[in-house]
Length: 149
Image (cartoon, rainbow, N blue to C red; front, top):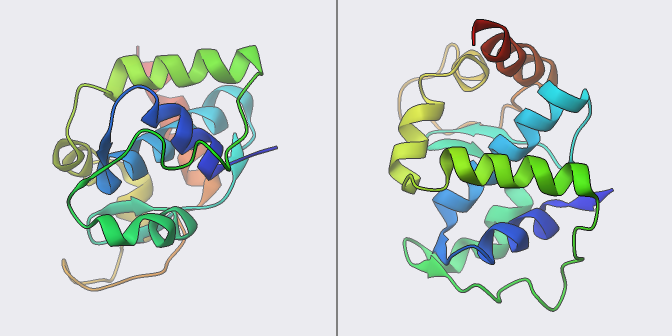
């Protein structure tokens, strides 16, 4: 199984981006993997933070960047190349769908989607949270989008 760093590295090869944007792209990769393949793409979960879904390991690795862009080679020495064609196809689809958006735009999008909203039930708007976004919620919500289209 791949790691969140392998997937993050794949996205960083497309362009340098902020931690926020990278977090959301990795979230969507994981979410759509649940929807299409009924399993996670990489080892790691997402928490329902104030600014959207966050993988804590990825955040810890990039926390010093703040709002600055992460260099494209940040994980290149430690990440494994993704060689699975089905995963590469899904990553390309995620990039084609979400890659044009900023981190703020992706944050706003996740804030309108059921998995993050459900994990934030009972919390104030700016209240910190470590609540995991349930994989089953990700799977069922993103699958429902497929049925609608």
